Length: 430
Ligand SMILES: *[C@@H]1O[C@H](CO)[C@@H](O)[C@H](O)[C@H]1NC(C)=O
Ligand SMILES: *[C@@H]1O[C@H](CO)[C@@H](O)[C@H](O)[C@H]1NC(C)=O
Ligand SMILES: *[C@@H]1O[C@H](CO)[C@@H](O)[C@H](O)[C@H]1NC(C)=O
Ligand SMILES: *[C@@H]1O[C@H](CO)[C@@H](O)[C@H](O)[C@H]1NC(C)=O
Ligand SMILES: *[C@@H]1O[C@H](CO)[C@@H](O)[C@H](O)[C@H]1NC(C)=O
Ligand SMILES: *[C@@H]1O[C@H](CO)[C@@H](O)[C@H](O)[C@H]1NC(C)=O
Ligand SMILES: *[C@@H]1O[C@H](CO)[C@@H](O)[C@H](O)[C@H]1NC(C)=O
Ligand SMILES: *[C@@H]1O[C@H](CO)[C@@H](O)[C@H](O)[C@H]1NC(C)=O
Ligand SMILES: *[C@@H]1O[C@H](CO)[C@@H](O)[C@H](O)[C@H]1NC(C)=O
Ligand SMILES: *[C@@H]1O[C@H](CO)[C@@H](O)[C@H](O)[C@H]1NC(C)=O
Image (tube, rainbow, N blue to C red; front, top):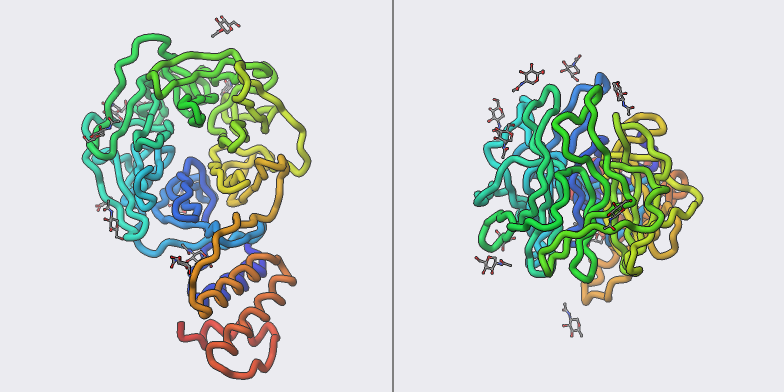
């Protein structure tokens, strides 16, 4: 459903001159914060008859602008679409160059035919050039449903995952190797660890603590059979698998409070600056509901501790969504809404310091720039547009547009009527 406010917003952006975009719902997409934008790409969407659709577009939210979850101003990246459809991949931003994204593995399909295409398994995206490059990575093999956690030395840790072998039955093989991706040498090397190896699993989340320990949460455990009418195991949250990136060692921890939290996969988690992991959503066997949709893991204790605070205004239960931390916000995007069994394009915001669900994103303060006055007037309009919704928005837009027009054309504003606003795109030369 597209609100009138959003339409007006888009029209305003046409003269601004940013492209406004209404994305389709999806699951298994990648979401990365890069250069103050939340960039989303990939994932599966379903048409109304539940046929899987393959996506190649890239779009983003500008995280320097305020927005309301009811009217996020998505912007489409023109050009530079994905070379093929990629879902459930390990993707991460380079530590050394905040302009580069690496995408390793995932379900890879030809956009037009939908056929799996594993002829190349790693890609690099140059953000400013909007260009994808196929990478030749030594030792890479087809894998899906794993995460890549990059550290401050530029090494990405990619644990286990799944290799689908039959795209009809979804049968495949789970792995328990820890592989490290070194972008300088273009190598994906398995670490030779024999002690305390976890059982093979995929579809987990992973968060790297300040002390170098990666905490793995949930997922699907080793089984050749994982889909309906075939038994498989969804991992519980009472025993967590931990990987120490400094010692290259595995361990497990029986954490406090984990018995109360349902096992899950296709959930999300983010780490806040206080050392707490915020867990949201996911599903269990047969993609069915779980009871505890939200929990917090305190990793500051010797034995980590789960708590399940009940917080009002919580979103519906989602799976296959994505979550990113930026500033104070856990930004949750899309996925399947298990309350109505529909795929969603909704955003939810959790304030990780105030522990509240909020509806307005306020950008973190930025140091003032030494910009020209012309540019700063544009910024003001952008913020004004972002604040409101519905009728309030229309009024703000008309004021904003008026200011812009009078500034640019040095003409007297005649009217603030809706009709007048709607004429603007065609009369604008930008
Ligand atoms: C579903 O719809 C798509 C077009 O949206 C069509 O190509 C496809 O054949 C349909 N599939 C079935 C099973 O009806
Ligand atoms: C996808 O399949 C079509 C039809 O077979 C082919 O023409 C196209 O080159 C393929 N795309 C890629 C990126 O391989
Ligand atoms: C990415 O593009 C920029 C130009 O915008 C270029 O300077 C840089 O070298 C490119 N990076 C890589 C790794 O290709
Ligand atoms: C992964 O699965 C494909 C079939 O989809 C198979 O050809 C390939 O050998 C498998 N790779 C590994 C490393 O098991
Ligand atoms: C996948 O599974 C189906 C159903 O069991 C079987 O008919 C088909 O041959 C399998 N395909 C492959 C590539 O093994
Ligand atoms: C990554 O590769 C580069 C180039 O081969 C090498 O100098 C560096 O030591 C490697 N980093 C690690 C952590 O292995
Ligand atoms: C999952 O679905 C299958 C087929 O519908 C059913 O046989 C099985 O009992 C279900 N498993 C659970 C745990 O609900
Ligand atoms: C966790 O608890 C289980 C039994 O509940 C026990 O078998 C296992 O050894 C414990 N693991 C650790 C690391 O303490
Ligand atoms: C902004 O101005 C300050 C002081 O006038 C100067 O030190 C700084 O280099 C300027 N920054 C940029 C990005 O121009
Ligand atoms: C985000 O918004 C700021 C302020 O309006 C603007 O300067 C910047 O170019 C925008 N970034 C992108 C990627 O659109």
